[in-house]
Image (cartoon, rainbow, N blue to C red; front, side, top):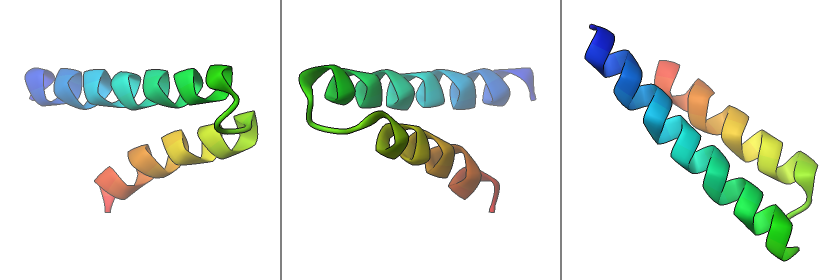
Length: 46
């Protein structure tokens, strides 16, 4: 159980990091990136 939670966390962290890189490059604005990260976590739960 603990390992699955870690996998989900590390995958989410990776998605978050990728989104913030896009923001830094000017390819996304911050609200869009935050929504993408939120969507990533909420779609896993359904």
